[in-house]
Image (cartoon, rainbow over the protein chains, first blue to last red):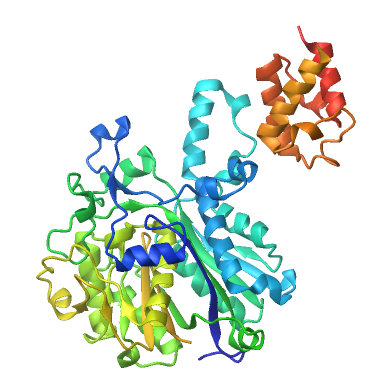
Length: 413
Length: 79
């Protein structure tokens, strides 16, 4: 621990995902091996090479007051739903924490794309006077963070890291720093994404980043498998409540896990391609383990970023093997959730925490034939069935276009 | 006529700002009593134009403080 303020713990969890409308239903579906992926049936998709999506299990607008929901972009709606679950779960509202000591760090990769594109249609069809006065607050990338801050009455600061698919993990790292620097007593962190729309779908498809296994939706997201051909776009949000361990224990809070360390690096290699050997990713993982005061051998589990793209998965496998070794149980939960972009790091941190708490590692779906890559072959990737394990420490890593690498280390409470 | 306007305005207020129709009475202030913020007032003005065919310019909108003010403006400017 590189901090004088003691340990940082996780006291609240929240999520709304393609697998479920809350943490419990999402976790149950994950362990049961269910897939959140389906084929889009709208007319617009017919010319699209990649037609798959991992839609939310529950419409977030239905979980919010109607008037409130219509003023929030879908990315803000999911943020609010997940954050309010985490906030309730933590019991922090009843603990008498001053609002000036409550902060929010909530990231998104894309932001309010649905509002931006929808209001552009209004502009084109009806003219500027018909554009909604809520357009800007709904499309701004700090919108999810701001919506969460309002929802829980946070006045100690509201922050919105944007680092593509590392945004959710980056938010957690910032939250850890806020507590270590004593800038807040409670920090609600997380990530949100909701950008299922023809334009982002076309853009990702143009990068050849998405799976085109359209006839087998549930088999399309297959991290580390030889036949993987890209990711499946997902939507949703996840949230965690962080606070200092001494304060949480003093108020009798339930502690899900400890956030023991974090590391962040940049590849400095290419705008979108990962370094082939996962050099920057490995440095982030090593830094996080060091920050936690642990040795690589202590890490029993890695929830990998593994999006199911051909180059990304092998680079990450190399990074894990080079930094952690070959003993840790690795899983890639995007095989069932799809890729939630800016929410991915937050959701996979929730999964990492639950794996530690429940002492079970979820399986990687669709890993029928692991890639011949030597690092993939060397890793112990859990497949077919969840595996019971005796775990004390685990890593969740996340990477984003732009060369952003974040790794987080959680340990058992 | 003014009852039609009040009913129509109440429908707009419910849709845009979640105001219960029974609360949309002439003496109510949008900001003080009904918690309608300035951005919602812009939405209400657009909805009024759609429903009643009455455009409310920004300088006029600034003078509309109560439900009754809005009703009078619509009444006066309705074709």
